[in-house]
Length: 143
Image 1: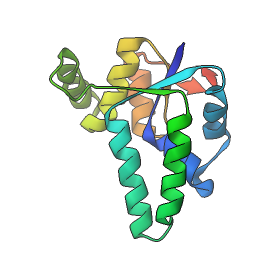
Image 2 (image 1 turned 180 degrees about the horizontal axis):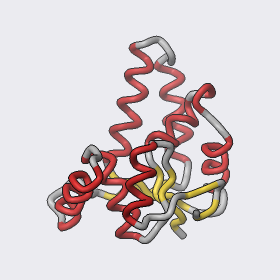
Image 3 (image 1 turned 90 degrees about the vertical axis):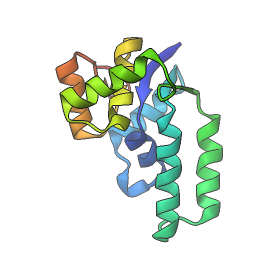
């Protein structure tokens, strides 16, 4: 059973202890009971955050590799929204309407289409979810 849409802001908090908080830990714990889903941009955002952290010497390559190894073991499904699909025009519409990047709008579109709550730490995305009628995933349970 898929329980929520996961974004990169939460995912990367699992990698960096200084960014982690009770909210992010509760989302990780929730993956013991359900699956998450993310748009395909999620993978690239995670990889980019890791490579930037390596360049800034916040992580060593071995740490990034270990994080990815652990991440791929989690029950997280990835769905394409970037390919030429009917959903890509909805991503553009949501980005325009909410002042979001197309990347963030992809998370919002997926949550709307699947009728799932959204797990994010991003303030603009949280506000857009509220305006769009998308529940937020709070404290490990649907908001």
